[in-house]
Length: 460
Image (cartoon, rainbow, N blue to C red; front, top):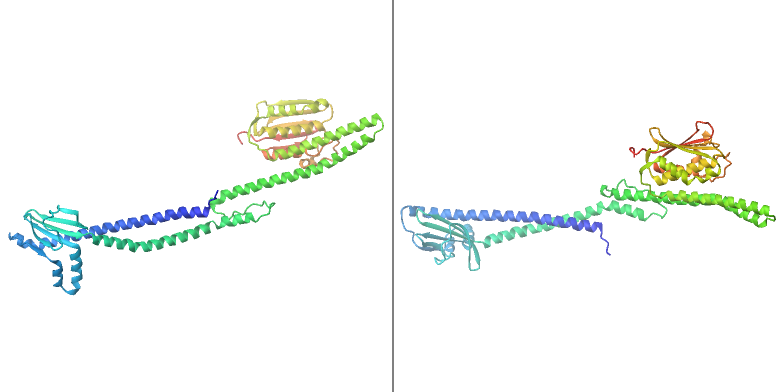
């Protein structure tokens, strides 16, 4: 399929409009000129008829009958001065007249039709004699029963019309040529900025996703290049997430895989059943840790590109679901778990990603709370809808509460195994959903309080 050119399409569309506009103006001018020509020539016919009437007015007033005669206009021209002969001869070639008295043709020019051709109606009329078309003006004096006919050969009008049309054709063609050349250059200059940007994009390397400079891009093309810059930004984030995932996987899986290899070798070398059981238990723990790391890495990679449409979510139901998904660990450790607060409170968020966030925070609380400890989940409305999670674990020192959101960061005093990805995942989801996470001390003093503040539905 042949692709169209914007430059060519613009040129032909605007050129067609320009040509039609010029031709339209020319047609209006020609029509106006034709009207002026017709009015001028008609006025001359009327004047000629008036002159003829004035030439015989005295004779008719005395009641004299007009003598029948045929007037040779060419012979009359010979009697005039040389400078006037050309005008009379031109007049004689294109004009004719007849005078009727009492219904009888009494005078006529040599080129006028005989009395076999009936009188023309009063006023203007058109007639054809032989191959010539004539314009006729008839003036009547009913009181004296006299009618004057003045005839004009339309070839003169047609010749003048052609001269005007041909005279205007040259400038019109020149004007169209200049307009089309100017149009072509204007389109070329107007699209040069787009061509420059396209060439700049084409010259980029495959890893160059920097924004396009759109400071000089025309306003009509600005949305296109803004969308392209948005796409580059999304690609940068996607590539960054992919690189982070690879780096994270390489960093975090190296240790557990090495441990698994060592545990496997120890199990193979074990002599007694007790040693073999001990190696198998250690091997299972290593596999569980590696599996948890893989799950967290995949979770981190998946929601980085996942759509997150906002909706009104019931926070009590959200917390219930998150507790149900993560209920195995508190049961095994005999942790006292409670959920309380406003059961009808809603917030504007994405239920799927928010559920993952709350689940990660609950898993963290269950993991670090010792056996027979307490975890309390409260749904609160402090001007902003939120979920507060209190645990009785070791807590996090105040000077390290911001660092724990970094990937792979773990408090040095932590004795519970982990990858350092839990709170990093929660922070990344929170940033995406415009959720604020605050870490503090619970009312009892020992443990950690996690406050999750959501946007209200009205604010969203």
